[in-house]
Image 1: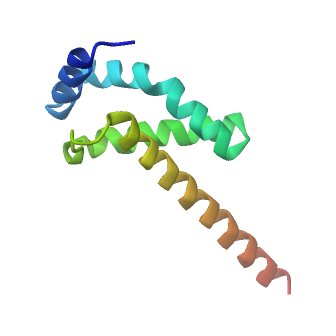
Image 2: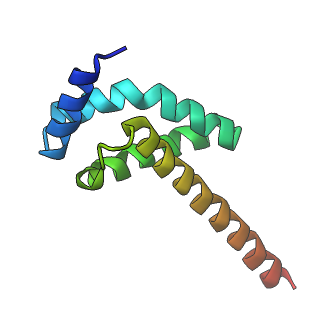
Length: 102
């Protein structure tokens, strides 16, 4: 487990655009986010795709991260919202296909 100071420093560096810090955070939190997504999706391929998208979105929006909250909590919230969006999209596509078949 990383020391909180190292984690805080890498979050701050990532917010400044440091690619090494991004990689550190990705490697540090990858299994946590992937495990969370596997539980939600029950599909390893789908979970991995959502995890990749989660980190992409997190690094795109890292300047909005509020250190008053845990970084893992922030990542998990992004992952949860991406999964909800994907479920909604699947439902919409199923409804659309059913309408086309009628």
